[in-house]
Structures are given as structure tokens and as C-alpha cells.
Amino acid sequence: MSEPLFSWGRYPAFPQTAHPCYWRGDVRQKMLDLAKVHGALLPFGNGRSYGDSCLAASDHVLHMRSLDRFIAADWRTGLIRAEAGVTLEEVLALAIPKGWFLPVTPGTKFVTLGGAVANDVHGKNHHVRGTFGCHVPRFGLVRSDRDPMICSSVGNADLYAATIGGLGLTGIIDWVDLQLVPIRSSQIDATQVRFDSLDEFFAISGELDPQYEFTVSWIDCLARGKPTGRGVYTAGNHAEEGPLVFERKPKLNVPLTPPFSAINRLSLQLFNNAYFRGHRAGRHDSRMGYEPFFYPLDRILNWNRIYGPSGFQQYQCVIPEGNEAAIRELLDAIAVAHSGSFLAVLKRFGDVRSPGLLSFPMPGVTLALDFPQQGDATTRLFTRLDAIVREVGGRNYPAKDAHMRGNDFRVAFHAWESLATLRDPSITSRFWERMAQS
Ligand SMILES: Cc1cc2nc3c(=O)[nH]c(=O)nc-3n(C[C@H](O)[C@H](O)[C@H](O)COP(=O)(O)OP(=O)(O)OC[C@H]3O[C@@H](n4cnc5c(N)ncnc54)[C@H](O)[C@@H]3O)c2cc1C
Image (tube, rainbow, N blue to C red; front, side):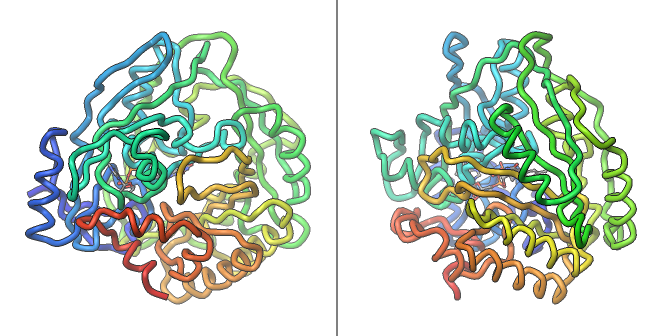
């Protein structure tokens, strides 16, 4: 029996029994067998979702990571076909030397293609290229109640739309077609600008976002008063010339879960001050590898263990365009609570439409912060943050969620009923069951 699986935040801590799937031809029978013995299951990619959206209601998951083969690649057009358990890292290893790159990548490359589709993930270039699903013209879907099928915008279009951002509930994706983007270099021409307030962030983002494909900002979540929202804006474009190199850097590891969280008020204050002051005022350009630009956290394997045995939650919301005051309110509430972590990110989404029914991004600003799990204190803070988000018609990201109320989910994701109708009867998650409650 293999080790139990958890979600990335290790909260809620429901250990999942893994049932690995090695062959595409076995997927359907495995689904039927598992459902018969354990009740509804869930596909599991690489467990990089933070909350309970990757946890099966039965705690028995079909582990897709072993479906890890490439099926086809056309290096003239950049269209690849791969099994759903292939990770973004494996795609990069194959594609970069050929002059191609991922069209969209989240902040970790350790996610599977199936997981990237099921959460319709976004990256630093949402304002230019939209979500991952925008670059997936078709995929294979295996359901317990019918024969395997191919889904695209013209064939099984209802299931195509419902599966992109469909949280793994519409069936098992067994392969994915992905349209890559051409690059001349794997390096990034980056620029960084330190900003002293939220107003400055909006001014810089307004000026530089249109000039750069990739943008994101780190913010000091403890700053209060005038410097509320101070931080560092980072932007970049693929360099026009340079080497095409898959970067294989040595990795550090957090080998054990410490008995308590290493993230507390003192360590956070020290880190945030040092990080902010470590960046000189003004704008600074540099050329860097794609790894430190896109995946700085991937250098440290198992970094989620530093939060100790109670785990942590990420709060990620999007505030619709034109409600900048709500971002300030969120940051004030977080600073007053002296909570949060050094992983605090602000980014402007664009208006590229996703083909997915339940895609999270909308035009506006997204805020994402990690919080050590601290029982009632965390609940009180999140209740306050939710009220601010609700008031302006924003929403939370299911891929990161372990606290959202069902009512908020249903209001924010209008298409949830279509997803409910198209859900595979043999599949359900702890997240989906939680959303059925008030
Ligand atoms: C450090 C870090 C940074 C991150 N940054 C971002 C970011 O910038 N943007 C962003 O959008 N997300 C981000 N994420 C979240 C992450 O990208 C998503 O949660 C992603 O979906 C995880 O993929 P996974 O393969 O680990 O899938 P899992 O987490 O195991 O599962 C995710 C969902 O996919 C479903 N699923 C998995 N495989 C299949 C399949 N074969 N068929 C059908 N459904 C399937 C599961 O049922 C589940 O609902 C980040 C996560 C981490 C840890």
C-alpha cells in the first residue's frame, strides 16, 4: 500500500488512499471497481491544490500521475498530445530545446496536465493569454456512465466547457492536447520596481502591464497605514535571443514536518522587512533564467511542511475591476490580524475569456496569501475577508479553498448547476459536498 496523499495545505487533513492508474485503457474499469467498493472517487493529479478540491468524498482517489507518457508532438506547430499525468516540468524538459514553452504556467511546475485543466489554472500572463484551458483544443474524457470520448469546442462541447475548471467532477481526463507558444530563448528579460503603497502599485501596474507578458507583485501583508500594500512589482518577457535550456537546478528539501509552524508574527515581520529593503528603490532590469522567474518556490521541495502539523490555508480571491478600495480593506484586515505569510501576491487579471464554465479569473485584481492554520483566529479573519469580497461581487479560488461557504460559491459561480448536471455519478469531492451545504 502506498503512502496516503494529502492536499498541499495539509488542511483539512483527510488522508487519501491512492489507487494508481498506469494504462489509459484501464481507467474506466478502475473507476467502476473503485466506486463499487468505496463509493464516489475523485481523480488526483499531483496534490498541488491547497484545500479539499483534490480530496475525494470517500477518501479514495484515482491517482493519475502514473499516466505520464507523451503521445504525439508536432514541432512545426507546437501542438503536443500527452497523458493527463504528465507534469508541466516534463513538458518543459521536452519543449524548451525545440523552441517552445508553456502558454500558461502557475507558480509551480509540479502540476499535471489533468490538474491544470480541471482547475483551469492561470499564470503571470493572464492579461495576455487567459487561462490554461484557452490553449487546450481537445482532451480525452472517461466517464463511468458512457464510452470514452473526445471533448472539444465542436464535439461534446458541453463536457468540454464543464471539464475546463470542472474540479475533476465531470470524468477522468486521460490525455490532453496542448498548444505551446514559440520562444527564441528560455531566458526572461525582467524588470523589478519597488512600490511604497497600494496607489503606487496600481499606477505601476497600469503603466507596465501592457508592456509585459508576465507580471506579478509581492506585497508586505503586515504594512499598515500609508505603506499599506507596499511591495515589489516584477514583470518580464521571453528574451528575444539566448540559449534554449531546460534548467535542472539542485533542490533543497524540508525533510520533516516541524512540531510547530515556523511562520509566526516575528519571523514574518523580519522576513518582510528584509525582503522589502533588499530591493532598492526605483526600477531595475535584469536577464534571468525562467526557473527563478516562474518557479522560485520549486527550489525547496516540501516547503509546505514549514507550517507544522496543523498545515495552512491559502486565501485567494479576485476583486472585480473598479473596486480598488476593497483591496485596501482586505489588506487592512489582514495587517490588523497580524497574520499571513511572506507568500502574498497581487496581480491584475485581464479580460481574455476562458472556454471553461467555472473558471475562476475575471477582469480585476487577485490577491493570494498563505495563512498558518490557527483555528478560530483563521476562521474569524476569513469571515471578515469573505464579507469584503462578497460586497463587491468578487469570488474565491476553489483550487486554493478550504473555507468558502456554499452560498458564496453558488452566487459567485453561476454555472454551478450546469456542472452539477454534468457531474459523473461515480465522482465527488469533499469540496463539492461542502459546497452543497449553506
Ligand atoms: C507553489 C504553488 C503555486 C501555485 N500557483 C498557482 C498559480 O499561479 N495559478 C493557479 O491557477 N494555480 C496555482 N497553484 C495551484 C495549482 O496550480 C492547482 O491547484 C493545480 O490544479 C494542481 O494540479 P495537480 O496536478 O497537482 O492536481 P491536484 O491538485 O491533484 O488536483 C486538482 C484538481 O484536478 C482534478 N484532476 C487531477 N487530475 C485529473 C484528471 N486526470 N482528470 C480530471 N480531473 C483531474 C482533481 O480531481 C482536482 O479537482 C499553485 C500551487 C502551488 C503549490
